[in-house]
Amino acid sequence: MATLSRRPHRKSRTGCERCKKRKVKCDELKPACTNCLKHSVPCNILATSPSASASPGALVPTENGSSTMPKVADPSLDSSCNMPVVEGWQQAADLNILDLELLHNFCTSTCYTLHSDPTLKTLWAINVPKLGFKYDFVMHGILSLSALHLAYTRPERREWYISQATLQNQASLGLVTSILPNITDENCSAVYLFSTLTFILKLASPHKPGDLLVIGESGLQEWLALFRGMQAIILSSHDALESGVLGPMFAVGARRSRLRDVYTSEQSVEVMQLGNLRCAIQRHVIQPHLLLVYMDAIDELQKSFALAYNGAFEALETGEVFVFLFRVSEEYFRLLKDRTQESLAIFAYFCPISKRLEGNWWSKGLSSHLMSEIYPLLDEEHKLWVQWAMEEIGWLPTRETGY
Image 1 (spheres, rainbow, N blue to C red):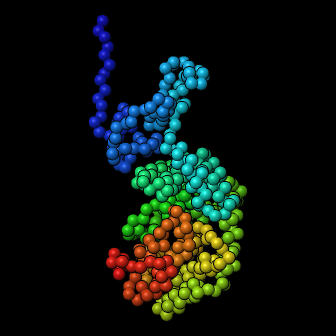
Image 2 (cartoon, rainbow, N blue to C red):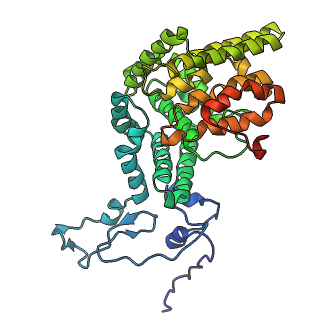
Image 3 (cartoon, one colour):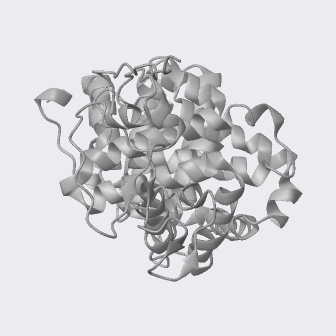
């Protein structure tokens, strides 16, 4: 009787190392193939390197790209702990070491850098990961932010951690798409947290030339459009958010918001500088409806100025800085998209306030980046309008920015 021979497997000569080990077809997408992205594991499609041989007792890669302990000699008994080996033990022991590293870094380090209030530091350390365990899109956002933090604290591996942050962020965006049209009282906290993580991720990510951070060529940047849209979620799910795991975040924010209104009347040299901008716009803008839009924007900016330059506050929180971007009208953003000189000049005065956040790793260089994008769009007269804001953040134009 003829012996049945096994059909030979045609090995792939291209693709990433993990797909080769799993003997699956690699679509060779960059910076990561679809299989690795689906399993949330690192992909070396850009630079495949030979695997290092495992030392005794070391974790070794399995077919699905995670890591596990090597098999012991006796298939039914692990002599190191005298425990019987259960069928399917290898699958149960699979670990994604990269995800564990990122989560550990978030819970022991990153979470404490996101707010100065002790209560909210604890919330980021405990409540936020709990939401991540319940909602995958939140967990991917957490891991993405942690990867960017490691890129900052470990500059020797900066590019690698940035690539991992990109992969985690892509996974998060892909998963949340189906949730956004169906926001309920049960998932509203997770969606709100996702928007917050997206906001911080945008600030922490490397900024590219030509990126105004708020307004792009096609209009309002996606992250800010999503974040401004959270106002509708807060209104529709207000009670659920306040009573949920993120409740303390809203309680602290409400208290700080009241302080912002209290200190609106505070006068200082900085607030007076904003007054000079107000007078300049009043002299140059003759259309009543445009003047009203600009004056309302300056009023909101003045509230942030009064709080930012009040000596009673050692630290300015993120919400107190960026609340300006959510209080101004849609008409102001339309004017900013059209690059009107007055709207750009007002936005330039937002830079000194954003400078107050730059003690945080995730907002380093934010004010200078914003100013470098605004300045070239101004004519010679309006460049003089923003001179004080430039000096306040210590920024000087270069040849690339219209010197």
